[in-house]
Length: 272
Image 1 (cartoon, rainbow, N blue to C red):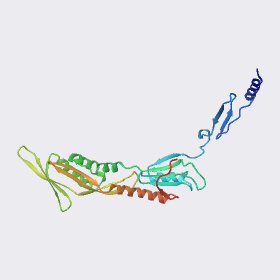
Image 2: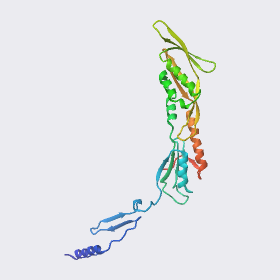
Image 3: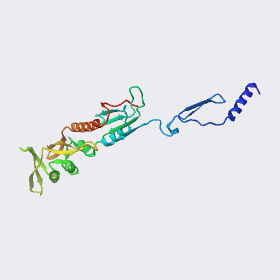
Image 4: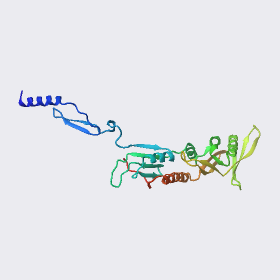
């Protein structure tokens, strides 16, 4: 056995004789093994601590009350708030950089507004012509959102439209009241038929909430129609719904601005 081998044997014996010691969480330990390799134990992670070293996580809220409640609990003097009307979000970076102290920016509260089902359905059908039965069914399915004419009147209109699905439409006339009158003929027997008129308003008003938890807004809808080959197609076109959505977002933004303790910036924060 060489002198080097004897020395290594002594080192190994001494190493085994050392009593184990407790390692401190939050630190990284490294040492050189007998064969010259470097070993490491990383105890810096939060899983080795009694409590996390810092707050992290992105929390998504769906209404202003919830957002402000979370903001009030976790914000400090360096928290930053950003508003993005395009994505319908308001983001609070709760651990943003301070003037002289950089921070991680990984604890965030995001108010992500979600459009209501009624808003989506009315906008999806806006500008689209439907056959009489489909249009009548649409009105009946959305009676709760109809404001003027009232739901009862619009239900009568829907039922009148359904009653003429087998008729042959011949002409359309705009009345002084602004209503639209359609003349039709309907075969009731092999020899003779009946004639009649279908009258619908030029415009009607719907009441919609653009976002869950937001205030309601009234929108004007203009009737659209296409008459050709004896068939009648009906629809409507909402007037400037994008402006209503922007106004609804601005209202939410103003509520947040009035409640938080920091200026609200237009844009979105840097990625963490």
